Image (cartoon, rainbow, N blue to C red; front, side, top):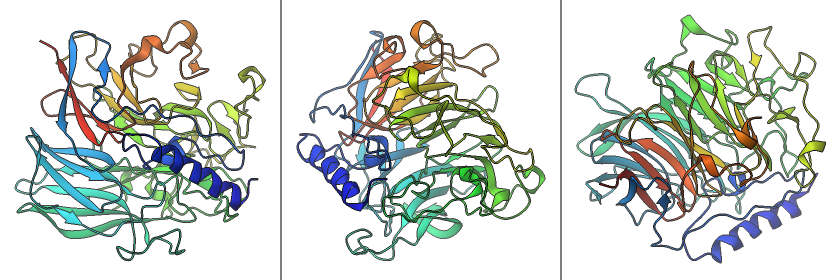
Length: 460
């Protein structure tokens, strides 16, 4: 395993890459989505970074792109209060900004202390208006003790990866309620955080292994939800968690077990995820999952889903050499001798699609809208932090698989370009950190690299 010195060198190389680029592409997902697998000594792939001011494109000439907001500092995710009314998180500020009609309102709605090293950040936001007269805003972030508590150079660990509920009152977020206090160490990577509210009006929260599986400092935390067979520990990492809007377990639907925090788990075996979304037609949950330096995934996540990490990434046994020919990679054999199944309550399922050469998958969004025409309605879009592309997929009739053809028919893209031309919808977004569909029915794209929010609209 690579030691601490190699880890620091890798991180410094990533920072150098950013410093030398003219646009402000930076560190949300920096080492994970640009791939960080220190135990295997992988290279960091190049990032598709547009020069500030360059406009991305969509390949369908019937569609165009507009700038909704700009001048943001490394925006990670957005949520809609209403039409042309957006909350946006910026990775390192610890603030929640409100953008109305493309203009930021005076002063942030919230200013809190967040840890910022590598993937620690202001990570996720969701909004609920299920109680008349109340707007609840849910935030997931890596909380720090103070604004100057630098969590790496000073060796100060963050308080935790925390989920809070706030109420929006008079353009401020108030009445904070702590809903979940999740691990943030050893870190600083694989914190997940792309929270969403499901069709059942419950919160779903993806979190990775928080560097517990392969830590460059040798600080391992190995749990049952990481598929360590000899472990008895469950501590909230490596899964997609589900709680109600008051942080309570859904007692009528506990999936993997009754003990806390296992009762929170909807899925497990997750290395890290920056994107989850529900299919509006079936109610099925889907996610994107980041591999180490290979094996980025798109998954159909049924209750009790086991994604296989750590023994399995993609369809391969963990630890393959991504520089070797893919045909030589060892295919995993998922069974009770390699994976934890929680007495049969958990079930492994292979990915619906894999990029063998990592693209740093991020946002996933079902396009529940007719604004782009029938050819896109109810299809799914995927974002990439590395290529800056949006990928488009159709689904089969029962919406349990992606429709794939040609070189992708085996569900594997062997490189970032091999066979993928037909699924590239848009490009040049300089590192996509989030995709959303607005109340207006258009697709919104958050570009971490350009510090902008774009909107895809009909070109007429």
